[in-house]
Each structure stands twice: as C-alpha cells, then as structure tokens.
Image 1 (tube, one colour):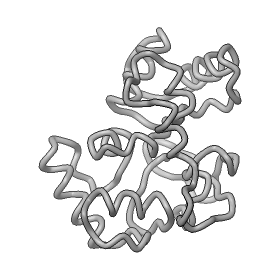
Image 2 (cartoon, rainbow, N blue to C red):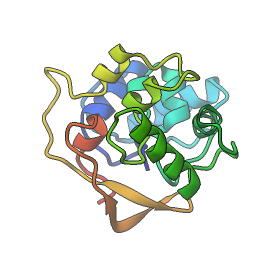
Image 3 (cartoon, one colour):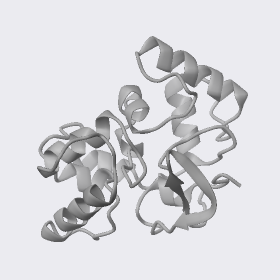
Length: 181
C-alpha cells in the first residue's frame, strides 16, 4: 500500500517526520507512530498510526500521495469522481483501468498508479501542481535508494512476498527501503 508505517525507512519517512515536527531520522519507529497518531486524532482522521493519502493531504504532503489498487478513502473517491467513474472510495480493478486509460490519453506512463504527475492532470486535484510533482522525486540531500517494490494489497493488508514494481524515477515511493520485510 502507498503508506508509511512503523518499520519503514527512507526519504518519505523523513518528510513525514519533518511535517510532524519530530526528529527526522528517516526511521519510522514508535516516536513517529505516536506523533502521527496525535496528529490524526487532532485532525479527525482514522487514528491508526499509518500515514496514507488522506493523512498526507492533511499534513500538506501532497507529493507523497500515491493512489493505487487496494487503497480506499476520501482521496480515492475524489480520484474516481475526477475520472468520471463510480465513486465508492475503493481503488479496485475498474479504477486502475480508468487511471491507465486517463494516463494514455494524457501522454503519461500508463502504470495505473495515480501519483502527483497523474493527479496534476486532473482538475479536481488543485493541490497537485507541476511543482508538487517535482517534489515527488528524491530531492538533493535525501538518501538515494535503490528501487524498491511496493507491497501488493489484499483487503487493506500487505501480502508478504507479493509486490508491484514502481519505476525508480516515479517518485520517492520507488525509493523506499524496508517495505514490510
């Protein structure tokens, strides 16, 4: 899932920690989880200690939003509405197909992942600008990571050993170390 949770390491975790106002060491440990839960509680979000698209949006980290199969929530519903498909808030096969078709029509890589580059092209995502899309790339001074897979999702949980490759240039998501090992 396009999330950050305890045990993950890397540039996206550092960005999250910076926004939470805690030590930005890039290691999502108990302190990060506690700070995230506190933020979620104070912003009427699901208090689960896991940072996903809705939490990233509330934190002002739109560059970390990556919508993909298996996710659900307000951001997915907004994506579905912008694509003109049934907006049930669950990113399934139909949403993935609609994203791929949209990407093809707009000259983007048709990977079915709705990250900042794709969301920038949708009118409903005003917070997504070309500048935000540029921030999605690993920035100077951030650790360089070899390409890492995103875990496959079944019912909201990562499936061990099941992955979807994300191109290295896609975003900081493609650079994360420690995915659910």
